[in-house]
Length: 165
Image (cartoon, rainbow, N blue to C red; front, side):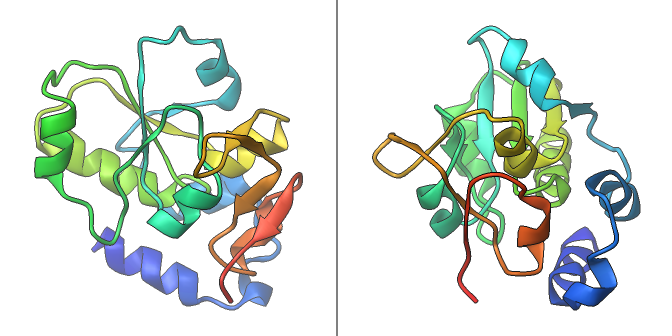
């Protein structure tokens, strides 16, 4: 059901969503089943965390957080994650563009028995909006951020907006 809500959201016109803040957007589309972590909290953590990028590969290749593992959304495979992260008590931070898709992936991880999952509030957009670095497909710092679409790009305030529309 949550996947359906995400697709409905994506198809919504820009005029209907332009007035929302990220906080209001997340309150509307998420149920807080996965606790949030802020960009500041994540940036202050030690390196003993696992970052999972739940966006599509074209988004990940344009921009991602350093050392993030791409797991995708449309073609997410729990078996692949289980092979990469056998310890179900690992500290996992899931992110996407703003935090909606990542909550769905976090829910899947939780159902599979993972116990220490957080959802990055505001996703990669808030990360970049807070002047934190993102990396491209060759692991070089970039100002480009894949915003999924023109409609979603409104929440990215810093950096170069890239989308496929």
